[in-house]
Length: 501
Ligand code: AHR
Image (cartoon, rainbow, N blue to C red; front, side, top):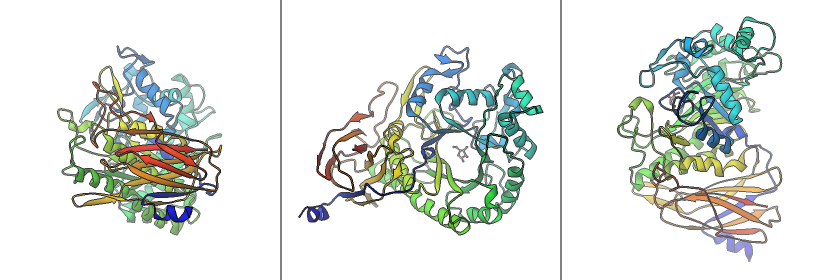
């Protein structure tokens, strides 16, 4: 009687709550900060002499927001910038640091006031793990090798002594190192065969110093370039590589004519979400190739750039990639993170592009003020998934359609925390309809439920400096638990996290 009722429910979710053996790596919830526009300068770093409230040069408001978000890692210094960055220009007395032109991003002068020590102090302050990308495009094997020695070597050596002279006695012991960025494009326009050889050379001299075993990440493919993955997997010995990167951006329209961040109709809204959801197929395809060479899934996919990419806000520098962030971005984040969890066996890390003021930022700043974007709140809601055990589930969802676009309305991920709590993240992408969802919890004796969510009147609702809380996290109560089933009235245009104990 009970089962047949649920079999007929239009929207139902069966969660296998007592199963699962794959851990969702917390690093899937990672972030990325490049020397691009106002991400580092103005967004994170204002310098110790600034009038903007700061601690040792770091914006206090941004720092606190990132501490609260508990970000697991931060990738730096690029992006395309990484392949024209020379780390020795960013150490020592800031007054003596040479300047350079940031040719990729707006042609602005980079004064190198934010360098290795400033980055390392920042990640220590916000309690996150650093991930550094080395320069392969315009750098050298020697340069990257010495950077690792500078950062990780404990003994007496020219680089370790230089670090001490610059005020850092102990080595930092950084684990995650990327060998170049987008080497198929801005990182040097290489062929995969050429890059694979270069990688082998760079990785050879990327030394493991005592107490720090590096996790070496090869520069991977641009979205659908499966050949790049195949050639690298074939030509790089597995014991020389721990991760293989991959980049996937969600755009509305085409690269030449990307849509606007806040002005779009419902068909464009759905088109954007459909494109975001294609990351599922993308991860499957790259992973399948990797399985051929690495059936035990030792080498991880590192999706170290992902997120939305729209037209810049009117009146801003086109090279600064500053865009607003709406409920559509929140849905892209929710759908993507649900999919990432599903691929946790192969996906070891992902980094949203980018942390502050660039692309799908979690934080936007002006001179003195800061706002949290809808995307920030999704990462906040999804915290319980980090390092939890992935649970399999079966979802039946109604569809939503606008014009020629059609998708399932509900998108879900399920996991179990160490204390046994079952986490269910749900996105209802239908902007107009509340959906009654019946949840069957197999294998647990559920006693209590808590839930939090975000919602807003429209798909383009967003926070501004004048109205900071149009989209904000709130407690959610519209559910009913009875024995092993749970009924949730999922609001329209919403993302939520439901926790069952
Ligand atoms: O995130 C912006 C840019 O996008 C990065 O610098 C580059 O790697 C990618 O093309």
